[in-house]
Structures are given as C-alpha cells and as structure tokens.
Image (tube, rainbow, N blue to C red):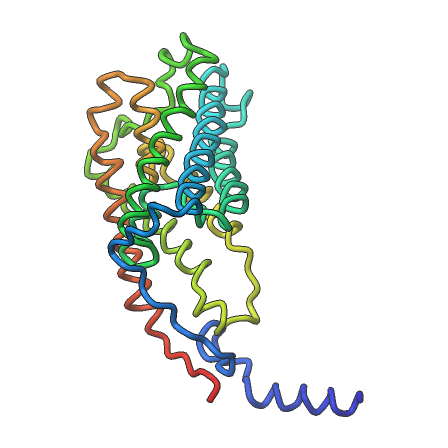
Length: 287
C-alpha cells in the first residue's frame, strides 16, 4: 500500500510540475458542465415563494449592514480623536466584517449580493434574470434606508451634526477623483465576487479551497482602507442612498451621482473582464 502511494506521488510530481501556475491547467480531469445563462425575463419567478424569500433576505442583510456600519462611523466621529476610537481601520473592518458575515448567512438564499452594483454585474454576466435583479436592487435600497433610519433614531442630534455617514467627495479631491475611486473600488469588489463564486474555477482549481465570503469581505475591507479618505467609500449604491436619504442635507446630494455611476461602471468592467479574460482559460473535461 505504501509503495502504491509513493508511485502515485511520483506520477503526480511528473505530471504536474512545480513551474505550472496555479489556476490554469493544474487539474483538468474533472467534469464541468457550463450552466445555461439566466433568461432576461422570467415571469414564473413572481409566483415562487423562493423569489420573495430571497428579496427579504437581501432587505434584511442590507438593513443590518447599514445599521452596524453607520453606527460604527458615528462612533468614530463622536470621538475626540482617532486614537480614542476604532479609527479608520476599525471602520474598514466593520464594513468588511459585516459583508463576510452577511454573505455567509444569505448566500444560500439569495446569493448574498447586498449591493446593487454586485447584482448589476451578475446580471450582465447572465447569472440572474432582469426580474430578480430589479427586485433585489429595490429591496437592498429599502433595507439600507431602514438601517440608516434606525441609527438616526438612536442619535438624532449627533447624526445630523456629524454627517450621518453619507458619502461625499472629501476636500482636496475633485469629482473626477471620487468617480475614479468608486470605479476602481467597485471593480475590485465585483471581480472578487466573480472569482470567488465561479463554478468553473472551483472545478478546475479544486486544489485551492476557498470560502467565498472571506475574500469578498476582505476585498471590501481593503477598498475601504484605500478610499475612505477620498469618498468615505461607497462602492454600494444602496449604502450611499440610504445614508443620503436619512441624512437629507444638500451636501449629501451634491456628489450623489458619483456613488451610482462609479459603482455601476466598475461592476460592468469587472463583469466584462471576468467573462472575456478569466473565463476564457481553456477547460478540458474528462472524456
């Protein structure tokens, strides 16, 4: 038995050389069947309970996401100094950590989008129908509004005085800077979502095990570290809309278009890049 195992190891070492890059052709002997693209319109979904259950999951996840993250931002701004609070790193961890937890909780129900930009990118890749995409976006925005509203209910005075967690382009940066930061930041997020949830990649690269919510949450954390000083980091139109509506001041609306246009462009670029470049890697199924 031990001799057979040694032969298997030798065979594997000769067949798959160390110079072979991970994620390309290291394993090509597993069956993989490409799922059909989702239909553009799927009226039958409207009579399915699973459709509405998924929408409720998106609402609840976005509600909790805004509640925890905006409350963390308010705690930071109420402090006398960054050193006496969680600091920017703590805020970034709140956003990334909540995405990790919520994607883990809702992935099996709705896919765990929690972000209209993610939904838009997956729609462009034909991972879900237009019917479901629009429903998700509406529920995400409603959840965000409710989440920010609960935070304001806890601290009406400080909430208005400290900006309500609304996304704005910070002094010293132009609108172009803000738009660029949102495009690149959302690209990083949506590209990570595609890579972490790609069934073809999981079949081809089964030797690289991955818990999908972990890299997605970590991507959100890193993007926040980079862009909080520029825009406060949107990369999620529902998050930006919920905070802007509840804060309801002119400065929250001056640059608001950036937090829709930027994420949608970034999501579209990530979808195109993944479908054309990454998914184009040849995959040889077992004959």
